[in-house]
Image (tube, rainbow, N blue to C red):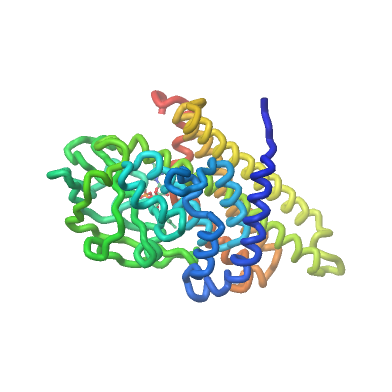
Length: 397
Ligand SMILES: Cc1cc2nc3c(=O)[nH]c(=O)nc-3n(C[C@H](O)[C@H](O)[C@H](O)COP(=O)(O)OP(=O)(O)OC[C@H]3O[C@@H](n4cnc5c(N)ncnc54)[C@H](O)[C@@H]3O)c2cc1C
């Protein structure tokens, strides 16, 4: 059976989040851009609405929503914030707190997850280093296992949410080599590192867009954490890190589609009002066809994003798909949605003429923000590699 409908509960949640976003997020976007910081009132409001740690099990105080339902919230937040700063915050925290809930030790989950749900702690991902991103096998950060502790040394770069995690609380699921002598991605582990001023030497980086989100690099020096901070098994972290990336990538697909559909809507509204050569811009068929093509692509991308989230959950909860099938569904959705969204927003900017290029126009913010998704949580080339591998066959590429 194939059922394309959302449940009543999901529709109600969408409505509630949309009302919250219209009331609390949309009116504060300009303030956020000016101050280059997500207003505290938004983070507090999101926590009050229960929008953090949404996949966290009830046992730790969470609502334990499934990924499709969390995707609905991601889409709505993507529609509300053209800069995509708040969507990034939402997707990173929700995807990686899910992974911690799935693979963390009982004691760490008890210490951390309740605060995640309340918005007092946030969970980020620290994988990228100054000299590697896509090529995880080249990682140099190490975690030496000695006397019941992991001693971590290394450097991470281009990491999202650093300011909030430093100032409010939380930590990073950190990818490190626990057996540096092992080749490739084996000998890699995931370790939860709570932020520590003493052990993190943090530098802030400035992004091209996403004015509200924070971004940074940190050196980690002799940071000793208990072995309970390990997720899953030592030296086998690479196997599970993809589960976090895939959840995040599928959310990026629905966020990008939601953001682009909003841009198209704003562009159409502008064209209806704008008179050129004696008629409104919407009377020109060349522009109508651009609206049609972009709408067709972005509504398709939205469907692909939800299919990816659904496939992910069928595999995670019921084992109905293989990991590789999930990777392909997710990679397809992220690749197409982020590429098409950039093009759609660029067209919507164009429809608005010179105003489109001004700093007052949401499409100017959106274009710079959405561009990040062709890199973050896995680049578009890596998405192509995954689709090619699963289509052609690993042995032939
Ligand atoms: C806004 C933003 C936020 C981010 N947040 C985080 C975060 O929170 N945590 C984190 O760990 N990382 C984060 N990243 C880093 C991100 O995951 C990396 O940028 C991404 O994985 C690519 O790695 P790289 O930048 O080192 O590029 P590289 O891997 O050096 O690649 C450079 C270019 O070459 C391409 N390329 C690489 N290998 C191949 C290949 N085999 N075939 C074809 N093309 C290839 C890449 O696609 C890319 O276009 C963020 C990045 C951005 C832009």
